[in-house]
Image (cartoon, rainbow over the protein chains, first blue to last red):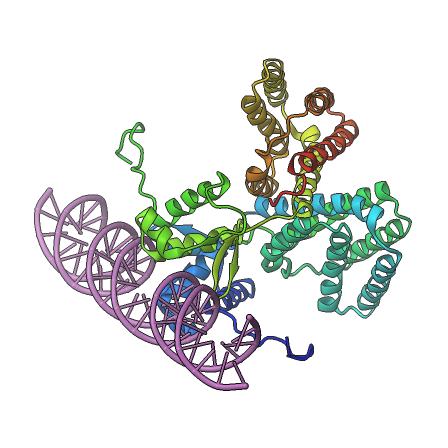
Length: 225
Length: 225
DNA sequence: ACAGTGAATAATGCATACACTTTGCGATGT
DNA sequence: ACATCGCAAAGTGTATGCATTATTCACTGT
C-alpha cells in the first residue's frame, strides 16, 4: 500500500456499461421515439462498437423497462400508456409516503436543515421562473425524503421509476396556476417534515401526487408517451 | 384470422430468456453460494449454450440485483448483508401499506371474498402445520393485497423484491410462538381488509413487518446471506 | 385492382475466434 | 526465508461470421 491516498483508480469502464448509459440517455432525451425499433447494426456503427456489447446494453435496458424486447424482432423503445404513467407516479408517491414515516423517525437535524435549504432554493427558482432549475431541485427534494429513510432498496426503486419517467416529465406543462399550487404544497411538505409530522406529510404527499397526475394528463392529452 | 381459437402459438423462446430463468432458479435454489463467482465457460458448457446468450442472461440478472457485475472479473452471486435484507422487507412493507390504501378503495367484493377464502386455507395449513403450503399461501395473500391496488408498477416492484428475498426466506425459522403471532396478525389483516379499514390495515402491516424482521434475524444469526 | 405467393434482402440469434486482463505460481535475487 | 518479478494459464471483453427468422416487394393469378 505505497500509493498516496490522493491517487484514485483510473476510470477503466467496460464498453458494455458505457454503451448502456449512452443508449439510455439517447432514449430519455428523445433521440429515439416511443415505439421506434433499435437497429443493432446501424446503432453499433454509429456508436463505434460491435453488436456484442450493444446487445448486452439492450438486454440491460430491457430489464430496466425502458426497452421492450421482442423475440426475433429486436428491441423497441417502450411506449407508455397514460395508465402506465399514472401507475408510476402513484408508485413513486407510495414510496415517498412510506419513506416519509421512516424519515420522520430517522432524519438527523442536519438533514432536515439541508432539506429546508434546498426548499428555499427551489422557492427562489420559482420566483424567478427558472423552470429547469426548479424542476431539478424539485426532483432532488423528493429524493432527499427517500434518502432520509436510510433504505437502499427503496432508494434504488425510487430512482429506477424516476428514470423511466424522465422522458415524460419534460413534457410541456405550463399552467401557472398549477405550478403555484405545487409550490404551495411543497411549502406544506417542508413544514410538516420540519415538525416530523408524519400524518400531515403523508396526506400532503398524496395530494401532491394527484396534482402531478392532473398536470401530466393535461399536458400529454392523448399523445403517445 | 382463419385459425381456430383452440390453436395456440408454438412456444418459441429465445435461448437468452430460457437461460435467464434457468440461471435465476439455480441461484435462488442455492446451487450457487452467495459470493460465488460465475464461470462463463464452464456454466455455458453445463447448460449447453455458448457464452453469448449466457452473458446476456448474466447482464439481465445483474440488472435485477441478483448478480453483482465486476468489470474484468465477471459476475458473482450477490451476498446480502442483514441490513440489505431488512431494507428489502421494509420496502415490501411500504409497498404493501401503500397498496392497502388503494386496495381498500378499489377492491371488488369478489376480490375480498377471494382473499378471505385464501386466508382460511392458510389457517388450515397452519393448523395442520404444513409449513411449505402455509408459506406459499402467505406469500400469495401479500401479493393479493398488492394486486387489488391495480397498479402494474407496484406489482412489478413487489415481485422483484420478493424474488430477491426468495433465497433468504427459506431459512430455518421454527419458533412456534413466532408462527402463532404471525397467524394472529394475519387474522387481523383479513378482518381489517374486509372492513376496508385502511388505518387498521396499515398498522397491522407495520407490526407484521417487524415480526418478519425479528424472525429473519433470529434464524439467520450472523450467517452470510 | 387486389389478395396471395415466393424469392431476395435485411435483421436478429447464436457460436466462435481473438485480444486483453487477471491470477496463480515458480524462479530469482537479496 | 521472504518479497518481487515475470511468465503461463485461465477468464472476461469484444469483434466477427454463420444460421435462422422477419420483412420487403415484385410477380402471378383471379
